[in-house]
Image 1 (cartoon, rainbow, N blue to C red):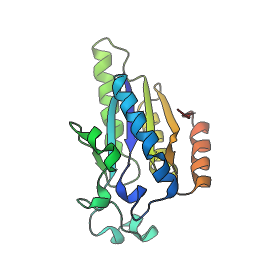
Image 2 (cartoon, rainbow, N blue to C red; image 1 turned 30 degrees about the vertical axis):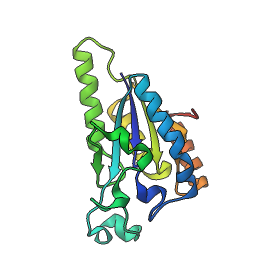
Image 3 (cartoon, rainbow, N blue to C red; image 1 turned 60 degrees about the horizontal axis):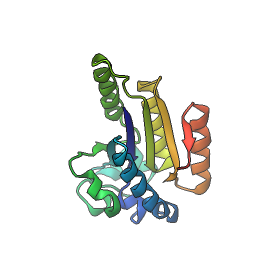
Length: 183
């Protein structure tokens, strides 16, 4: 079984409080990647960075004092170009960079498949935002939960806080045996 994880493709990271031109530029590529994954029969999971109104009082808020992805706001929503793909899928809301819940879901699915005599989770591809914060955090968490699965990041469907930090994150993931592709 192959999975596509769409990390935090939310309005605040594309056109809102923390939006960048690089994030805006990957949206069409991400939409095509999701459509292709569904055509190939991959399972698609979405994550959402999710904060409460007291964000500025949290450790993250003190280090990044820009309110963003506040639960229920427009900035918290998945970008319109990808929102239709969430139909029938409940995004995983995560209050921090990486989601232990996402790792546990994938590990449980791997175990269930193997109990049924199937190969399990063979490949997990990540796309989304931001390469240097949430994508890298989730890629390494998933690698810890599924050390024998192929973990891949499609760099053409990711953007970092800056182009330089995007490249640094890709290099770091590659050193941790996460494959970097450009679909």
